[in-house]
Image 1 (tube, rainbow, N blue to C red):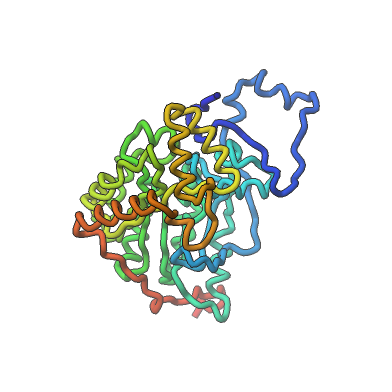
Image 2: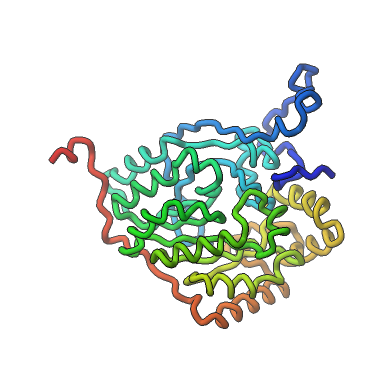
Length: 355
């Protein structure tokens, strides 16, 4: 089993779900690239510009607390092996494995499109989420700054915003977020999967170190930005023993609320996750998958609404009980807030801005 330094997936399986043609070896120089240039040359992150016609994605899922989102990027350099967004890369005839981490798409027109959509007649305001598919603060955001530009539009319009991330890079926008927080317009969710750097290094290799995430919670909280800690995903026999420690540590850092989700393995994620287990945890791979199957009704994944975020059975009950007790013990992680929608002011058009 090959372990690729700095990457989460151990291989680049092709997806067959959409019957897309797979490139066959044809003997040209591309087939010899790895032998000539070495594997590192194939693993450089590539970014392709995407030009969508709209930027707000709608959903009607009863499992999430929002009905609209903006995703500035496709693919994610963080390389989290468990990422439920990996299968989306198959739509581009790319692998949900290494391709998902190295062949990214950026949407530089997102701020302009967002402004247009917020300004449409009849737009009804409700919290907009960022980070629901891939992380809005993954490393390429440092150069592209698409997420920041979108937040600038939302701040100008006083539009409510929910952010989910697993990186301390979110603190680069603390000026905008603190301004919105003063009007109860923003909440930031920071995912803390483990406190163990060694586990994080293989599980989510290019996301922020656990200590940096906790520091981000402190910095945002000190600036008046409400922070929600996501203990997600909980991976049985690898990270589940840390639930109580993560909850307590995040509360001490200033988090105001908390949630958890057992690991989900939809579609192509399941075989990638199994390969990751074989590479990094061969001593317990069978045990981990046995517990996950028990949580998911005998399968690797359960897609049913109302079940996919919590699981079922004895293990699901145990995780839920432990988490609730851990939250109660902090005495501070029950301060969920409702974001305001009454301050929204549609963006002005070019002509109106003259008056």
